[in-house]
Amino acid sequence: NAGVTQTPKFRILKIGQSMTLQCTQDMNHNYMYWYRQDPGMGLKLIYYSVGAGITDKGEVPNGYNVSRSTTEDFPLRLELAAPSQTSVYFCATTAPLTSGSHNEQFFGPGTRLTVL
Amino acid sequence: ILNVEQSPQSLHVQEGDSTNFTCSFPSSNFYALHWYRWETAKSPEALFVMTLNGDEKKKGRISATLNTKEGYSYLYIKGSQPEDSATYLCASRILTGGGNKLTFGTGTQLKVEL
Image: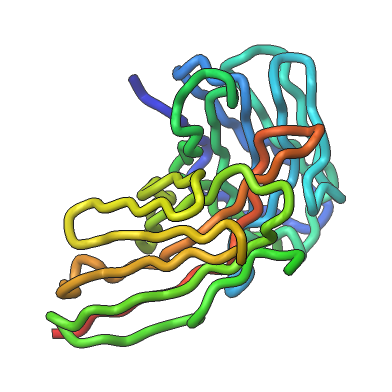
């Protein structure tokens, strides 16, 4: 099992460009999350999804969009990239609370994005 | 406490020292407390998930305790080694209508020197 995979690993964008960060999981987890990590700020939740077809805003959703058409995929879209979106982005998944698991989150390897 | 807070922000210790750090979290509607270990250029890895007041968990030289009534958890590392150098994140999960979300602290960055 690959777990949680993210592509690309690195990307440099110009201001105003758009891009999609891909996240795929093969653990059949319902819950998926997108975080950004900024120095000294820990992980901030951008968007999350409780299952295919359902998404919700996190703490810092502005400037981003998501979709969840399948259980496996949860892409994050930046429509008009801004320097403030320079960050490291992590995708994560977890099993539902009722599954009896420890409910820890499993993280992807991250995407380092720079907007110039 | 409305947010998850960790202290200290960073810590330098010598190899062989024992150390501990603190995570404070909202005690109302508490569901679970998570600890993660996060090495530079890697993704966070789960260490412990604790749910019950008084819980103690141990993994090798690392252990954690939980006090849900006062809203704090301690992480202990006994006999620190250079490979323990990492950022240690805690995250709180509360019971909400939206379910299954974690609120992360900003982490404690540990550096173990020879």
